[in-house]
Image (cartoon, rainbow over all chains, first blue to last red; front, side):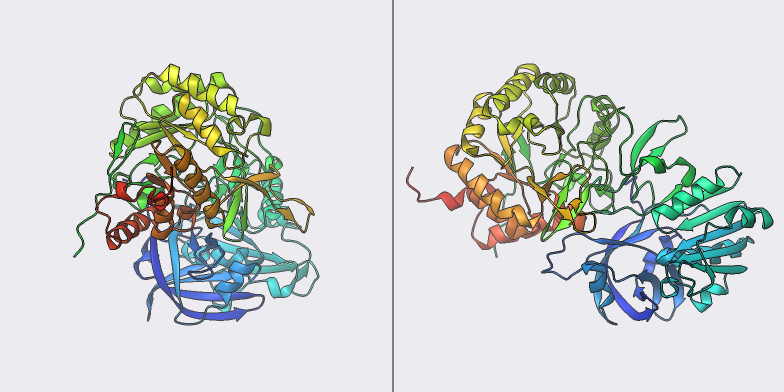
Length: 281
Length: 313
């Protein structure tokens, strides 16, 4: 019996649609019953480049949202930034193309059992998994506010239907081309206090996750963040995507962000040690 | 119709129903892959090299994809032998997996200490002595680059572990005269050889304009190194035709596996291919069987070293 990756399956799936949205591609996959085990925060690992590719490793993407009742059966949506050779290849795949995926992988955002005030914070395409999360939180009676930030307006991902699933949405860009000029963290403590925030859910660059963790360390707010580390396998066997994380006993160990994450408690991540190793065991 | 090929193989006194194994360091301790196939359906799980004490390994970034390959610099992160033997080995044996434990040490004494711990464990198929991990702080400590140090490690393990458990010595291709190092470890008591460990490499990041990996250098694996593996296996099999070889290095399909077998490998470890394809081992096993049958081999062992036939001795 598997104890790790226990919902994951490897499957050939079909691209239903691939649309450009700002700086990103919104890719919809027909994945069938896989959607039944997908939770907000989980990710998918996709083979890129075709059979003769020199790219041998899968690329990991956060699952933006899933739908169980579309005309195509179960569908999974991804928001992909065409940054490197692998993601550019993925963004060039047209309707009807087949992809080899492994999903769902990784931990999911913890969903409260009673209604709370949630603040969702996304950086760049890190907002992608937050809209599916918002839907789920709303269905549990939570109040859901959202902050999105990016360097420029074209890197803000905020679809119309997504806006409907939140109570409020505030956008920040560093160059002021969309929303308020600045960063998502600049008024964070004020927002937490004014809106009586209980839990922050975040996804985006590591610097943003670290800054949020530091700001909320003086509050009672729980910070669940989806981390981003480069991965070779996505299934826990390569040991490359590790982060220093402290457990309840106070011991720090290098945990795999693919199976112990991507969603982690921000307070447990030793952000100061990322890119280094803890003292000898 | 072709008769089914007898795919069983042996490494020393250990028998395996299938010649396709995981590669040390590419399957963690097996639990992660168990979702994708039954571990008893492959030849053996070769576990990640374990040391006496728990170890954090190297800082990130630990990985860089390269053309048809990847560099890693994990640095032997692991739980330490006591936790490993208490938690991981019993689970694997419960799955009816055959288990080859890989050990790594910083000193000759550490290898002997690890061997002493393994001596009392029942149910293991073999021990892999990894004397060639490139991701250690001091390249001078890569035992497999030094014929004398290699022999002394294997000699220490052999004396400690007694005569029963087969010893597989894992060697590095980054040496001038691989057959002489192979001969040395066999003389010291190794029953089989694992060829090859990763090839030392480096990637420089064009943004930082510094080495990309936290550990600066890393081990190159994947299809890029397959010709190096074929060469190493061919050379060693030519020099030591009676010593079984567990071949590895860039095997990602049945054809690759057959190539290493024809060069002289009795078994195949699949490593990096599992990162891109969690069911690679099963696909390779099935493809290999078909390829052997199509070439008229009734048994896997008939194909081992077949590329050497007709050569003058």
